[in-house]
Image (cartoon, rainbow, N blue to C red; front, side, top):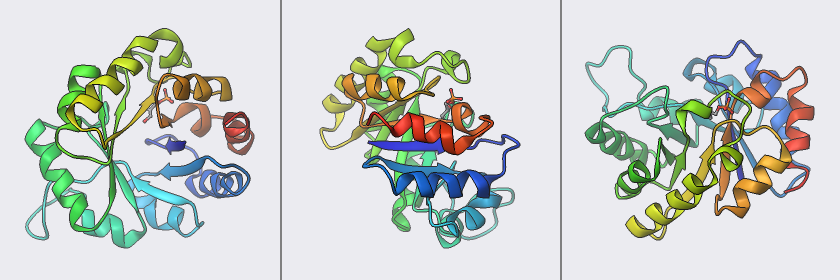
Amino acid sequence: MLVLVNLKTYPCDPVAVATAAREVNETTPARIAVAPQTAHIERVAETGVETWAQHVDPIEYGSNTGHTLAETAAEAGAVGTLLNHSERRLRLADIDGALEAARRVDLETIVCANNPAQIGAAAALGPDAVAVEPPELIGTGTPVSQADPDIVEDAVDAATAADEGVSVLCGAGISTGEDAVAARELGSEGVLLASGVAKADDPKAALESLVDPL
Ligand code: G3P
C-alpha cells in the first residue's frame, strides 16, 4: 500500500516531514513517499525518503521558462511524479506529453482525476497508476472512502476496463489508519494525503497512526 504525502505549498518543514516519513517507513510494510515542492526535491531526497515531484511539464530541454523539466526533477532525486492534480490541472494532450517526459527518465507516474470517467481516460494514457480525488473533499478531513465510497469502486472498474495493469489510488480527506484501511477495502492500492500530515503538530505521530493498521 503506497502512502504518498503531498506537501503542496503548506508552510511545513519539508526535511522534517521527510525525515519522519523515512523513519516511519522503516517500521511498516506500507510504502511511504513524500512529494515536496520542486525547489525542495533535492533536500527531501537527501533524507533517504522516497521522493516524488508534484508535477512535471510536457517539455524537453530548451526554451521553456517557469517549467519543471522531468530530467531536472529526476536529477534532484525524484523517482516519481504526480500529474494532473486537482490543484494543477492539465489538458489531456498535456497529460500525455508529461507522461512521455516522465518515461524518458523512468519517473513512476500517478495521474490524478476527479471522477471515474476521468479515471478511465487517464488510465488509457498508460500511467503506472491513477488516483481519484473528489476536489470538494480535499482538505476537509472527511475521507472519500466514507463520503463517497462508490467513487473509489467505480474508479477501480473504470481504470481496469481501460488498462488492467494500472493501479488505482484514492485521496481527499484521508488522515487516519481507519481511512487508509477503508480505502484498501474499496480496491485502492494506495492513498494520497496532504493536510493530515503536513498540517499536523506532530507529522511523525500522524503517519505512525495512519500506517499502524495497514
Ligand atoms: O494530493 C492529496 C491531496 O489533494 C489530498 O489532500 O488535505 O485532503 O489530504 P488532503
